[in-house]
Image 1 (cartoon, chains in turn orange, yellow, brown, purple):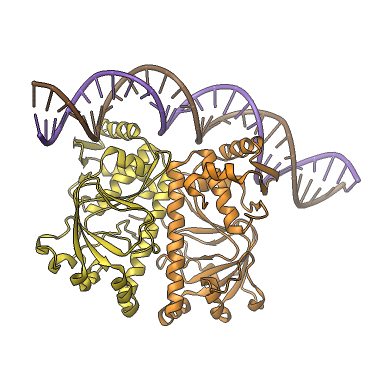
Image 2: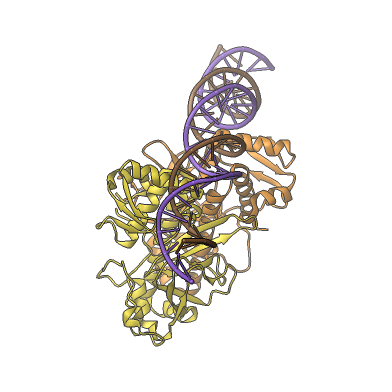
Length: 248
Length: 248
DNA sequence: CGGGTGATTGATTGTCGTCAAGCTTGGTGG
DNA sequence: CCACCAAGCTTGACGACAATCAATCACCCG
């Protein structure tokens, strides 16, 4: 079964390359824990990384492209998606600052990556990554752990799509985003992506997303100061809605 | 590029297991490949495997249990699911004869495993598995490849749930099952699971599953000789329905 | 043959999708 | 500084698809 791979294979990895002090680029939102995380381990490859910039809505790589690099998002937000022939679009995942993308998967990309906002990434050669993974058991363990976390998160999203209605999906999404951006405490969530992106991620339409947001606003669960921000006013109510898809 | 949904691999591991006349235990439906698969590598652990039997609807392990073993399904079908407090159920995956389960994930199970039919499994101690993974690069590569295939298959399921309507979901499911069981040629698909299982896997109700099957039967896309068998009469039509979730 | 389980079909409701206006916001240029 | 414009967001009216509720049917198995 072919997963409808594009034949476009131009290598975007070399584009927008700049001579940039990579060492100065520390991803935001990346908690500096003492236990080194996978992205921190990657720092060892720092000198091999190439900085690239992409502007809003620009493609970063296409489904089917050779997967020669592992990308670390320095700033901005990326969406991993599939475009269907009939116009439907599936947004599998949003990749945030500090996250990696392309760690797993085979020799070719299974998704198209597009810049949701202006984006800066560091591209590490996959060959180097594999070599390091081969020679360093601790690094390997990190990769595996990263992987199993990622797998779990994809499975969780399947659950959301399979079992939840519109408001529940939205609640799960907002809480998940709040967790990832560390906005749980401040209660203020940045929505880098537009309504259509959210809709395509949650398997709903843009209108349904709007109505669900409006409803939660009216119930004083959320505040929506502007299109790209959401303030959590009643996290308990939100968690109830999200149910098992919530971390609490 | 062709990507198989099938996380299954054919098995030779059972043949000399100590606890059971394992020569009889060759998983059915597994296409023969020459390249050694992950389950074949597992054969090296065969003396450490324990044969276990479960009857229909019996739990095999529960969500949250310590994940001390990796299970290889010798015969029968298993469902990995979550039971929600409000009664909703999410069937994440069906595990078929020859498949492994519990290879990834952390120290605890993320799903409950239940026997769909009577089931025979071999349980390998995870510690042994990890040791082998640590010492043998080839084995490790197999694990990673297995993993990335599995990840892709979960992501494909997310797509099905997020983008497809009832008949499309059913078509994707049937084709996927046909691929995995090698029934693509004969055109006859065994449905080990009941309608409710399928419904909970596809995020639909049992009535909707029934109606979708009936509709495809009336359109001469399928034949349904009995509840647990489906004959593919028009694979092209089915593939069209499944769209990008189909192998062709 | 009767009972039970699971599957199927029908009638009706409800949620979400579709279509069609408006509305906000941010950017641009006069 | 304001008018204008475009893109994206919001709201409303309506319809379609799937959920729900309720029988009825088919098939095992004792």
